[in-house]
Each structure stands twice: as structure tokens, then as C-alpha cells.
Length: 226
Image (cartoon, rainbow, N blue to C red; front, side, top):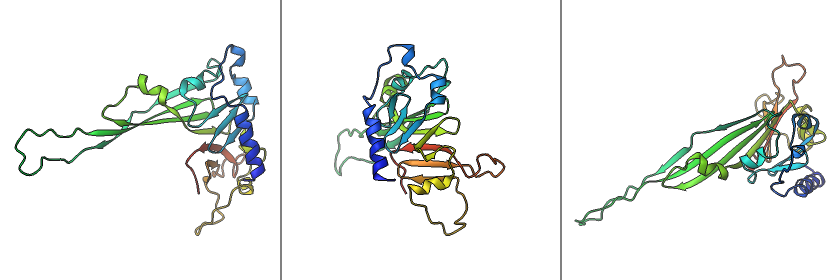
């Protein structure tokens, strides 16, 4: 990725970022028509520029994002996952010779909360981790869920750069990111190419002639690296 393009992208997202722009009227909401006609720029590790606003990884919550969207014209679906727990159990015991009542140290938990918000052809993954003795209910932890990744599929206009976007040949990836070397079948088109903060999904089904060898989805997050 060139330093100039990255700098321009970073300036762009921060110039339209105030974490949450309040929508005072329906005219300010993102509609289906505006979603389909607007070019969405994805900025690795940061977020996306969506219409005239920005949506940031690690900052925007569910209610904040929905407040920007005309949900009457754009289909939205929220899926809240069952919390996952790691139990921390203490294997403690009374010291030798202790004859009094001994109280076992209670177990503690690391709980991961997650949710997925589908907004037309955008997929927002949310997450939140909590350490403690109790599992929170959704009404308590939902406001703590923040975006962990954003994925855009081939039905709308989106890209990292003007010449690296959905619908482009997968070979465009290597103008900005190093191509991996594979010992087996080095010329085979891979279903996914991962770069710093980005996952590119490529159409590898030869029966899909219109999209074969092209980028059909792009995901950005804070974790994916070579």
C-alpha cells in the first residue's frame, strides 16, 4: 500500500469522523438508493466511509449505526449470539493442619459477547468481553458491543482504492500487497487473500463466468495480518 494513498484515506475518514453524527430528519438517513449509488471506501484497521458519515471499528455501537439508516428502505437483521464463557476455577484447599471452616474461592468467568448486524449487503460484527462472576443480560451489555469487523459483498460499490475494489481482478491486490508464495499449486486462485487488516474473497467457481477470478467481497478488521 503506498504511503500517499494510505495518508489520503486516513485523512478522509478522520475528516468525517465525529464518532456519531446525530440525524435530525429523515433526509439525513442513509436510504437504499443512496447506499446503492454511493462508493463505500474501506480503510484497513479503521472503518468505512458510508455516504457522508463514517463507521469505525471499535467505536460505533448497534444503536448508533441504526440511527444513521433508513430501516424502512434498507433491510436490516440483527443476530445476537449466545455468550461464550471460559470458566476460571480455583483449585484451592485449606493449608495443612487447618481445622476451621474453609471457604472455597468462587469461580470467575471470561465471557465473550457477540452479535451480527446485516444491513443490506454490509455485515457488521460486534463484540465485547467481560471478566467477572456473572453473565450480563442483553439489555445491559448491548451498549458495550462495538464493531470488530465490517464486510461488504458484491452487490454494492466498495473498495480500498479506486483500482482495488469489488469487481476487480484479484491480481489488483498485488499492486498494493505482497503476493504469498505457495509450494503447492502456486498459480491456483485462492478463495481468500489476507493482507494487513483486510480479507479479500475471490470467486473461484469457474461456472460463475462473470465473476470468476474477481473480488466479490472485502472485509476489514484490526487483526488480519500476513
